Image (cartoon, rainbow, N blue to C red; front, side, top):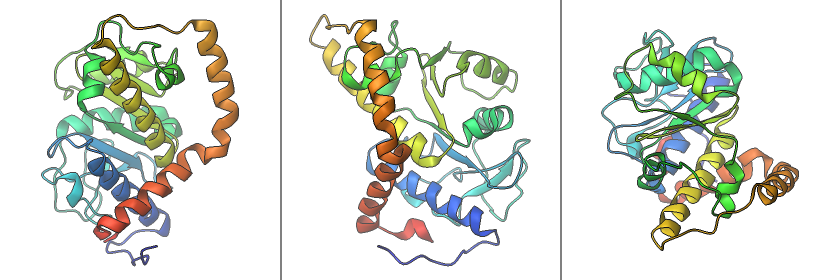
Length: 254
């Protein structure tokens, strides 16, 4: 395991750990091909600080993000940290509204434009119960109609309303927003959603899909919830991928 470096920014030990986990998450997303040039975002609330979160510096690729260059901003868009970087307004508007109004439910948030997830967001039926992973999410996803690039604060109310009690919001014709109480939980949810979408796209390319009944979906979700605790809500998955990226490049820890 890589040596734990001392913080390169003035912050609490809790914030530094959040920075490390978020930087690692950016590198994992990059490794998995989930980056989108310098766009899209992953954010995490700063532990112990109300209405404050960390997000990627605008202008850097995901493989350039490190624990110390993450930007600390409040939900009004003010840079309250030491970063010299700016943030992308589209990312700030969307993430800030969720962090401000959803509390711990949205501690960690990602928004991606992967080909598979955008394709499913653009499909009239959305995510269909046609494969193992897709069954995980049936009845647990909100949908929000496309309104253009997300830079207008008033859209935030509709985003939260359409999310409802769920933790995934499919922005139609755009891409998904995935959130959780922890970074590992958000990551493993995003991983499973990506797989569900990849398989759906491949399945529908063959013609008519075999749709799984709601009765079987209900049994699947019941049994899955029993098994979920074994994986530590994504902790095992996240730590495994951190080991992988450490072998490739551990500079995210800087």
